[in-house]
Image (tube, rainbow, N blue to C red; front, side, top):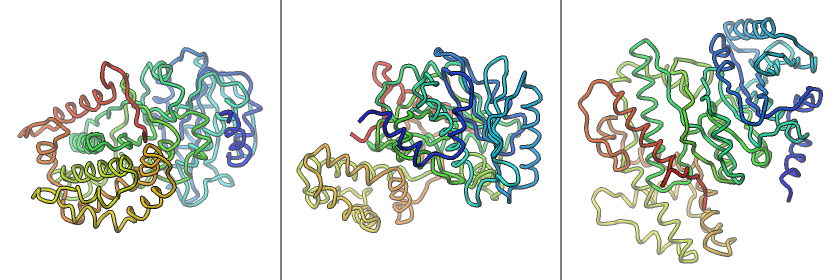
Length: 454
């Protein structure tokens, strides 16, 4: 099937109404960036100022101002102020649509399309949020791509508190055409407030620790789900029906779906710089995590990471799934091979946790409908996805593999290559984990690997 057909079907059946107005935008573009803006002020303009030129021509930036009726007054005021500032500083503006208002603003550096879903009569629905804002922007760009007016085969997504790398579009030029998505390397910009900076360092450590643990275990979902650092292929984006309209974790769920239609590539180029700040804009993510760390008494001192043995149990389960695929569906035989004499391995806990998740029923169904080993393994990993991987890790934690103090976890984990450290400053450990993850992304001989189901 031509990749254009799923895109056309998606646009006809599932795209947000704003996408149709892309036909009224004049011109063609080399690259496109989508930026949801919710209560942002100067940070939005820092993000826009960081968008680089690309090798294929002018870059289109789509800014989606968004809010709900119940959003705090400060969010509404910031949206109004930033929207007015964008319009005032443009060389010219042209209205594309009135309901909701969509304008094309001309700047010396390129074109900014502003979509206003942040005022009475056009607020986002209750319970929806940044996911819908991303979907509105991506659908608008997808319409341009389908019409032959976007040269690059990527839609870059970021946040309004992120500084893009100077070579962002050049990094994407090197990605193979079969990839469903690409994820940029990132680092956090640290606050001058020492407590906020400490919280940001610890949070970044937790992100990298988890991804390195998944990669060591052999999981095909070993990547950070950061909405600020994602580029999607138009056909893959259409195949998964775009971003979920959720108010949080939309990046996690869209990548979980994208991984099932094509490989996801981890990029090892210059990093995107993320704002390490306290925020309550969404119920998950960096800002919320930092807020919780700072608000909970003793949280910074008592910061903990998943037990390293949880990843060893995950690795055993992934090896068991591979063994089942190799042997043509002998699930019970694979489970009998789980370590039983190792005092550090709790086979009964692993089996009990998987049984409660319905894993064995799902795998038996996958075995029944698979004609060969590779297909069977793909079906296994399609069911045992990023969400169920996290669910298993948490079940193991609740069942008897408690989280450890973060320094202890780093010292004991076989996938971090870090010895115990008595330094008060976690920065050296954060930097070391970042380096390990960059090496993971660079792969052997500098060839960036992909995260694929097999």
